[in-house]
Image (tube, rainbow, N blue to C red; front, side):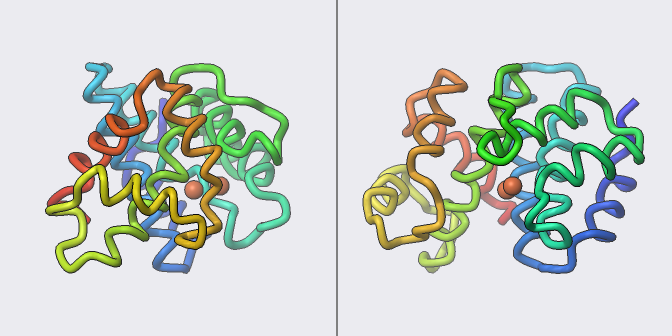
Length: 182
Ligand SMILES: [Fe+2]
Ligand SMILES: [Fe+2]
């Protein structure tokens, strides 16, 4: 059984103080939930996907060098999170863990992480944020190497491929998930 959402939120807040990292965590959780619903997963799977999104950067602030291994090896197992969630967190950072995203939840988490951060940066530049955002406003910024330069464009591209979507459709889905919420 996946710990409930309140428990997971409390766990996140016990490790993360930065507002921007809390927001990023929430946004990735929203996207994971959005996709799980779109794929018509049962409710417990929707919760699992949401939780993987919420907790994927759990140890980033306190253990930046060990991220995400500290969470994968210690924190998440100690708090009774399922293997699905733990493996997904591990596979969102293949360069650090050596685990490539393979299962569905792993591929979706990888596909949703960097693009969510990137789109938040785009939203901040716009007077109306996500509400009137167009796919083009995002793809244009992706081509601008200086904009949010810490976001690896290669991972954004690979992510969409991993979930079998054209990048523009993936971005459109995220706009829909974020709209009216962020
Ligand atoms: Fe991460
Ligand atoms: Fe992240």
